[in-house]
Amino acid sequence: MNNISVLQNFKAVERDPYPHILISRALPEKIHDELLATLPNDLIDRQETRDHHGKRTYHVSQVKKDGWKISNIWREFTEYHTSREFFDRVMDIFSSWNDILPIKKDRIILEDRSKDTLPPGANCFTDFNFVKHPPENYVSNRTPHCDNEKEVYAGLLYLKHKQDHSKGGGFNIHKADNLEMKGLRELVHPGPIVKTCPYESNNFVMFFNVKRSVHSVEPRQDAHHPRISINMIARYHGARLWK
Image (cartoon, rainbow, N blue to C red; front, side, top):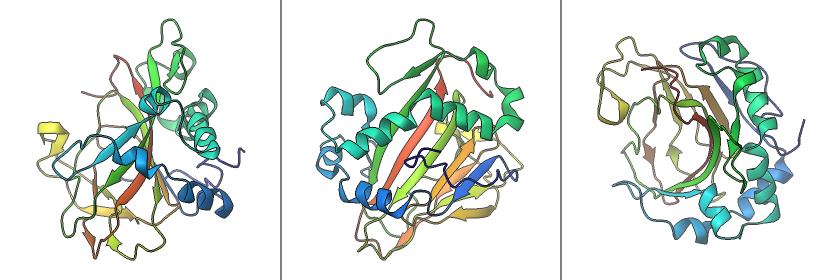
């Protein structure tokens, strides 16, 4: 297993309330520490804010356009986690749910957005983002919701400043019986939180995007540093996992 893979310490898929994995200490300490030390904060901070909380997202397409002005380890990390190798590994992990895929694994033509070429007939793509939320206390910067129905999977790696002693900010997993939604796929009745992946550096959470994959961000307390996550997804161009 590649020593920069967030999945190298994967053990098992949790099935309830929807397919997901939680991995603490996902990366070797040396790799984690180098990623944290070379996080491209200046480049992230140049991006426009994307919501009223002040969230900034640095997409791999912009990283590429900027000429890969990130450290060598970040480039290697980015390219691996958008690769076909990583995509196939994730599909194998969630193989028990592959039967619901509208386009099956062996028929997926993958666009890797870290690359310059677009494969003819691409019907799915991988993406990778640096995400930074400014410090906010006692407020969730993402209330209970489902992701885009074209999304296949989503993963988040947390990177937390060593001086950040805040509490909260974790990834909440909800068990929703009623999937009635309002704007931006937010749940009217999100159901109880049954599990939380803590916002601790080197924690990784990933889920397979079935319709009941309801999640939210835990409010923070005593936050003086931004909340940083590395997001990696796969998404169909047109097909939908659910409606």
